[in-house]
Image (cartoon, rainbow, N blue to C red; front, side, top):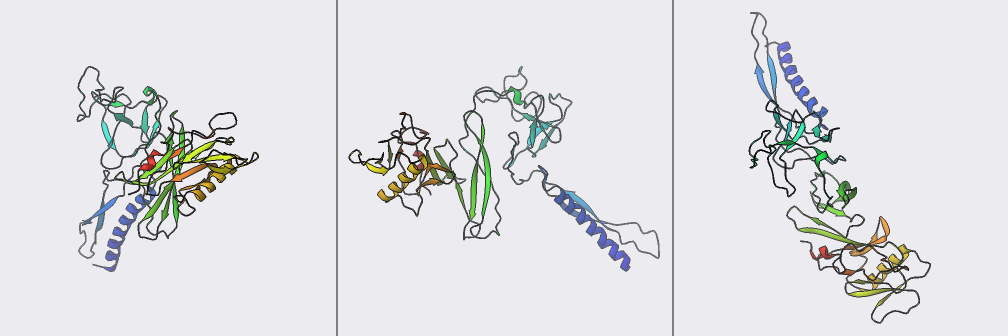
Length: 371
């Protein structure tokens, strides 16, 4: 083999690798794209000359395993869907498929609602699903059939998803699942934040933040989050359902009136301006000109000085960094925190704090100790 033939053969292989590498880089942000794996096979050319030798080369045989799990990415679209684990979305080229339209499979879950209400992906295919009744029971798409068969993919059983047909009462978000990949080469103390969307009872979208902080141990992170407004308790759990941390909050909406009380861990704390309090209560010194935030700070300071279960080290009680009129209660793995805010009233006799749930049970989730 001549020197030129050897170089040509090497260049052939190098160009093949570069081509497939460019595909992976170009599509790094493409929804549903999976990395291309390259297999090579020898390319043998015919020898047409007795004096010159053709070195041939290699040609690539690209292979994509479209069924593998890709990275889950956050989205601001309410109609985007992701699959965690095995499975495919079923799509069709027609919004009302017939036996002449082909069903296809995809793991790309970037769907949008078209002007007719149908969910379509970026390739123009319509999302298919099994219809259900009001109780969530799967029903055939063909109303002349009485028994649904989820093992058969056909127009008799599958229908195109149309959001214009969806109605009913909105249900508030109760559980949020997060799957995250964090950089292993981060230094101790480095943080990352993920914003998560959730919905209230009216169907309004809200967001909250989850913060990851790198610990001194390899591949271990601390996770923290604070309850969103109008939420009683936020509990972080691992994939097995074990509580990792639990934080509750008491949101003051106005300045508490003279002699208003709140019970924390069985002790009654009374807001007072003139040192005249009910026997057995602990005085929280306030003034007629103090603000709601200042009264909240006085209450926290009094709880810390009166109850050894609360101190400035473990932060079982503290002011919400994002709202100076809100108290955060953090469960520390020892016991629950009982809070009864029904005695908190303003000058008009209305509640001075948001009572998220029933008295004495506002922080009932904190009964679940960390494991």
